[in-house]
Length: 131
Image 1 (cartoon, rainbow, N blue to C red):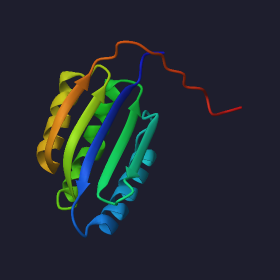
Image 2: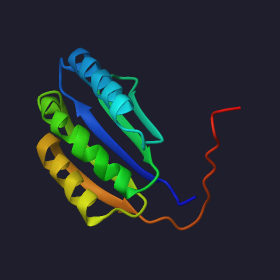
Image 3: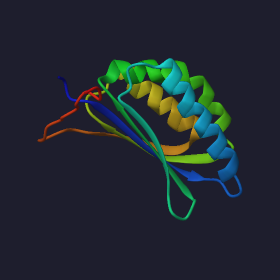
Image 4: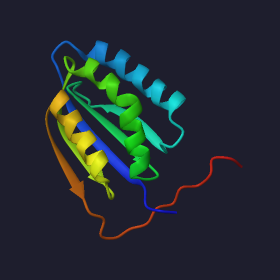
């Protein structure tokens, strides 16, 4: 199995927008689950103080992330008034296409930096959920 492709983004939640954001992000997560078969994990976390949202995505490869950006990308505009995207961290080997897609997302939603992290060591174990 190839190493997974991981993207973590962090956003500042705009004042008074948390409830609206929670509804919108729940809809987005449900859309991803229903329409994308390749992501291994799509998780959304809110910080204790309610001011930061972190999205963690694990894909089998860069092509899966490209597909996610094609399908879910048009929905991102509705979050422009709810968050300020601060960072996008990529763990894995991104294609030029996915880098461009993530840079466009960064411009749309805030002032995010897009950083690629090169793996130096480690391993991955994903087990089937069926028993």
